[in-house]
Length: 302
Image (cartoon, rainbow, N blue to C red; front, top):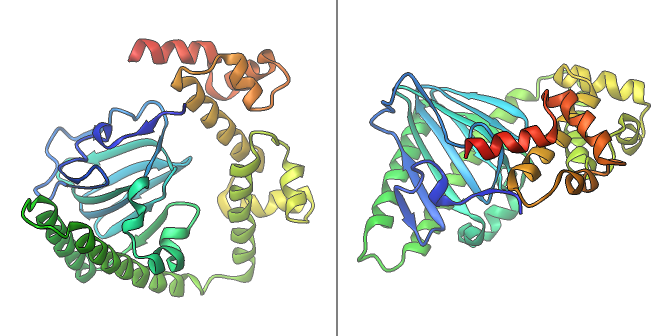
């Protein structure tokens, strides 16, 4: 099995928890350990089994999720989707952050209409937003109310109360998302076209990378030539398609090797390589070490 992040292993993200389904975490008094801190899973990727809402009230946070780097500062929010691959999470000294985590078995707590209509909750990738001081104040207030409900042993309707608070939170975030979309609506048609192609490409890669590593395959899915496809991807993200495909293949290979449930040959088979030798060369070209060396390093570091 691929490694997942249970609540108990997510660094200190269990300060207030209800039935291990909803967890709240904050550093509202400021993170104080050293100049910066990296979580214990920074070196090897892990896949989440939760949805995470993170608000940077003040300070700076760096994350790497699904091969994308994010830097958060005052008023920034990120909605981390279920099944996201966490590669790193870093809080800097003095950072004030609040985070709400909802585990997959507890998704029913979201109001049904919100989960079906919300761009934030139905998006394939993580969503980033920037909010003003008033919105931050609202979210911190709601967070504190949720903490009080969760920690009150005499309160008998916690799930109903949390569902109501989550509806308010998602409504606030949807409003911020709509304002952001309005601002982005001023971009040029060419930029929109490249972004549409890129977004679909990333989605296609995540569905097909285990079998298809050829740029032409993904261009065909969008009914464009490989040359035009490459130009649009470069315009959208500054990189070529093969690099993005390769990153997904290598990240999945690392996850499988880290699980210690698969041999190198089994990983090669799962990723549709003709033989372990070809897979080993491909892996070493991207990582700088063979799959076996990578697996051995993980064993030493545990």
